[in-house]
Length: 122
Image (cartoon, rainbow, N blue to C red; front, side, top):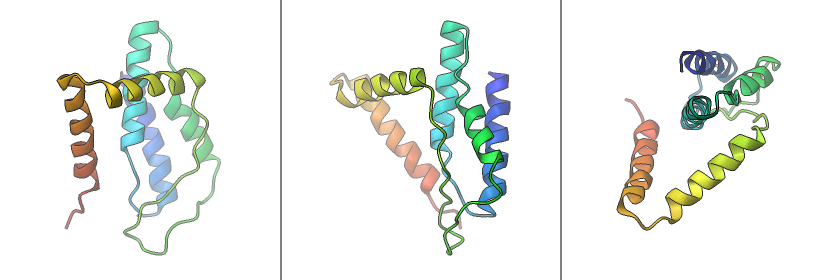
């Protein structure tokens, strides 16, 4: 878990460097880190999604940024490992299609979290 946290911090440093003060999305990074932790605990290996993305971004001097400083920076996306994509597809499908109340609350919680993250700070 500690290694994953350090990887995510390294990724966010690269994103902050390239974003030059623009905001950027963090939910996909947190989701990938959580999946990497679960994968490592289950299978004893790591997918290293953040490391692959950090490597891609560290090779860039700059990215195209919106003129409005309040608009989010968008970054090129490194390809995710096939295992990560497979697990996320199954996970998203189960959460979106399962009629059980517990899974519905996961969808609602995810939507609320997205709203909190996107809420403008004034």
